[in-house]
Length: 400
Image (tube, rainbow, N blue to C red; front, side, top):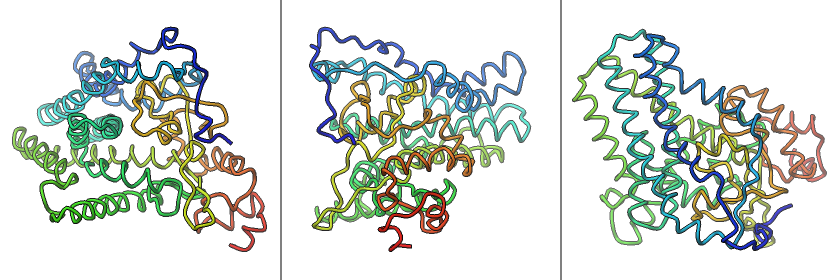
């Protein structure tokens, strides 16, 4: 198994390393504009199918490109890290993504409020916008891990687009601490379907974030209702943004349907990511009763080039958990890590069909644990079924 100590590559000399994806990273900035491109094509052609352009690309085209182009061999060596991290080009791309998310939301709301649309067209556009606005959480994820105050505020501003500002606290201080343990609501259990997981993860994430902020502010002698609460800050931005949209474009009943749907589907994108990223994985307890340190092996990785290019390398998740502040262009992939069979768009779709997801992932979890079911985090309601299918170790027989 791969440990953090093994996450290294030969020193090849920074001068010899070339990031072949350097300009392809612009796709991560263009992708959030997909709903606006769809609206332009609807206006140009009159074809309603383009309301679904984002969904077609996300669930259809990108998975096919992942198959076509396969895995990414481009891995920066240690000697190139400092130069890559210091290159402002890469961080400017993340900054540019923030206004694109706002533009997609505002333009889509304007369209719904001013254009005649069938009810199904409104729903399809809302789902399309929800996909890219859910990925505003990915931009917030990239920026929120950084130490600079500007980047941390940019994270809060972009998270406000989809009304999920508490992610700023919950992910950095909660998930990274508790990942791959039963204490983490953002870690799914083997046998737990995504629908059951969402009912545990979404409220659990908010509760953990609120409690973390309550403790932090309490130590400083401040109320949890202070404006220094980093959950309240992006929440106020969300309230101001959505109130302004309704006031500017009128309390149109279509908007009162459109806005909640796109927001809910945005949340669903984060739930989908959390669901697949650590499915069934479990950190062992040490002799003192504490969990072992989180290792790269406690995250499912995907090194597919096409989907990584529109997700700021989110799918190189193992290296991210090993080095949370490392910028996306520097994240690496290594042999021996737990591997997803395809990129996130394909996995998100598969996750919505629980029997298919189980058929794809459960055997991979068992292989990850070297056949020892006692080393897997298993959903209680699914335990007997899983034991019957994969067999039980002596340790699991005691639990059962």
